[in-house]
Image (cartoon, rainbow, N blue to C red; front, side):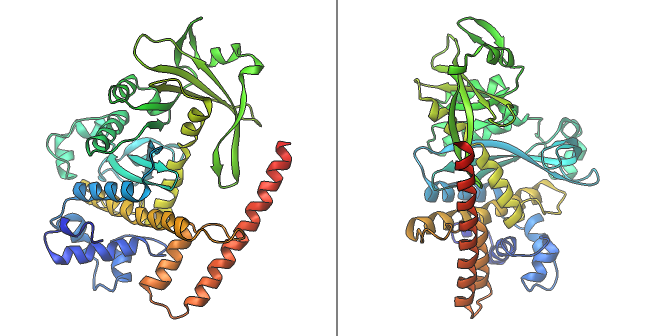
Length: 412
């Protein structure tokens, strides 16, 4: 918390922000100003509400501190930036950015609020480093509605790829370097975003729809038509990286594309080895790269799903009950900070104390559990807590080993 202390004009909001972050890391079944204020021992929720609504501090400056904290501790020369959006189902029409729109959280069109996040994913861990709220046209076309929700007067409509571009450029302008960018079809299907990444010297593996048209030496084809022309020898079995249940093996193929612009362009195709389901990615590299590099980058996109799951499950990212934009930006920024703390501690523990082979490495969930017991609650039964932690990790290690053996037997 000392990293962001200077962002607060007074000591009272600084101390209350610390209590709010601890509350976000707590095991409360529901996290909002009321429950966290009670958990923190405050007399009413008004202080927490004041911190989010009216207190003098800059959420964007804290966001920059979160980015610096993550990059400093999770630095990886081969790190990938992952862009993706997540939605929170909301009732009513007054919460900023809410309208009926598709959200992957509900997997359907719902009354929801959607935000785009930028995740830094490296070998040591992954965490969100930026966020932008998606404000639909139904809001930007109504200045009075925007003003009531705390949006600035000059708020204009921006697509999700435009929000992603702004965050990536903010990351680069801060002096950080990253080689690759990845994202889903929302971003891969946007030519302006791809062009902007190329101008900044970034390489990318971005998903595209099966209807995307690409140009090869043999002519112009839809992606799903081109895949039918591939011979069997074009496919290679490769892992997209380890998941919760072991390596994620798929069949992969790559086709060179023609383009007069500088760089090397390809269409990467992934085929599910069980269902035959296909996925397509447009790739750009400054120079030719091996297939396994493209596959690894494409596989990095799942890191953002893990980040959302942890931020929501452990740090209350989606549990805010606020209506105005300033309150939203402050809540999600502190939730990102809380999750980044877990990710950094996890990375440091893995480096310093790898642990025995019969225990899985410490997870963010296990770290939060121990942190609450040892640091927040100051419980005296530390040995008891450690024994239970070891039992859980040993049980999970046995389950994982058993699954890996079944997976290996299936693959052969």
